[in-house]
Each structure stands twice: as C-alpha cells, then as structure tokens.
Image (cartoon, rainbow, N blue to C red; front, side):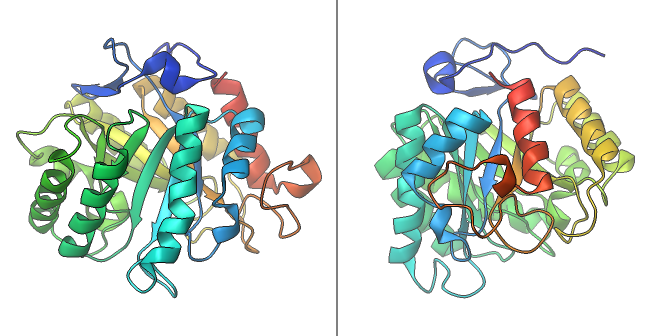
Length: 307
C-alpha cells in the first residue's frame, strides 16, 4: 500500500500552518493530510544540556525533523514539581527555538502518575504564553500506567478546558491506559465534544510488534486519531539490540495510515535508545562518530521521509 502523500516542507509551520484533526487524520490549515516525523528530547531533568536553541537549530538543519518533543520530567529527581523554574528554563528555549525555526513542538507532561491540578496549572500557563503560535502541540500525559480510562477522561477534560480558555485550536495529545498501548479501550469510548484532539500510542519495536500495529490500524479505521509521540527500535526498556526489520515495519505502517511520530530520545545515556555519545556537544554539530546506531537510524529515517 502507498502511504498518504504529504507535501514536504523545509519550514513546516510556514507550509502547513495551523494544524487540525479531521476524522482520524492530522491535517494542515487547508485540510490536506500531514504526517509529522521528528525527535523527542530525553527527560529535561536528566539531560538538560540538550535543551537549547542551537541543538534545535542543528536538528532542523541536519536531521530534518518537522516536530520536536520537549519531555518535561514530572518524576525522578529535580523534576518540574520540585524545581519548576529549572524545568521552564529548559523547555522554554526549546519552544522558542521551534517557533523561530518553524518546527512544530510537543510540550510533553512527562509523567506516569495522575496529577490533575498541577498539570492544569502548567498547561494553562503554557497556553496563555505560547498558544497564539500554531507551532505548539500539548501532550497531556506521557504514559499512564494503571489509571482507568474513565479517570483519564476526567483528567483530560480538566486539562483541555485549562488550555482552551487561552488556546482554542492547537492540537492536544492525550495518553492511553497501560503505557499508551490500550488504544482499543479509547476507541470503545472516545472523548466527546472536543476538536483537534488525538490519542497517543507508544511502541518499542523489539518488544511491540504486529499485534500492536494491527490494534493501531484498527482504531484508525474506526476513526480514532493516533499520534505516536514516542517510539524507538529496541526493547521497551530502552535497551537491548535494535530490531531494524520491526522498526521498518512500524514506519511502513505509520506511513500507510498517515500517522505522525516522534523518536525517543535525544540523550547520551549508556543505553540503546540514547542517540548521542556523552562527548557530543550540547549545541549540535554532531558528526557520524558522535551519533549512536539508533540515532543514525532515526536521522536516516527522517531525512528519507522529510525534506
């Protein structure tokens, strides 16, 4: 099957403008299908050094993403709840750089726990400050683990209302039960009454294979808009060997179904999913000897499918 044809855009926001969701498909301001493909930074509180304008500019020039994801850690040490000023000093330069470089940017509440009041206050603040820019995409909840879909719907309802009082139209992404795997539960009872809302699915290709691809394809056919806001080519631990065949099978499936995705992660840990070596500069200029095998696969994928 041929994938949905999309216009390539070196400056995607200039080309596509205000994104909108029509049925199960992400579309540009004119209603034409769009597929965003990009890179997620690692947790801001673990790899803050990559949260800078030069790194985003270099990514755009050399890796060709159309979207970047700022993973604002709400867990682990020195997280947003413990140190909000530092968190904002990390993610705001990324948001501002994406706006300057005409990239879309996902502002990700990177949590595994339900924290409704804190999330609402945060997203209200971000929407008030940046919601006028079509570049911004809000990710309400990175990976729910044990929360029921009913509880998650109530959470999303509160967060969406907090955002929409300042930003009526930018796209919002909402996580699903069980590490963003159980999209079929969402399809049985999707949220009602909201526009430009999508649901996230996460996969790690050496662990999650054809069964999850089939599930994703099925819910898209049922009209549920899916955005793969985190994905990678190894095991779900973020480690272990790369499975290139399964990664390509996922890419083919996403392309066929017109599904956008962001690859995890721009970081320098001694693990398979970290894309860079520790000696890579914080600000870009990453030569091939500084990019780890997964990073090379991501760069090659983005340069092949994006301009």
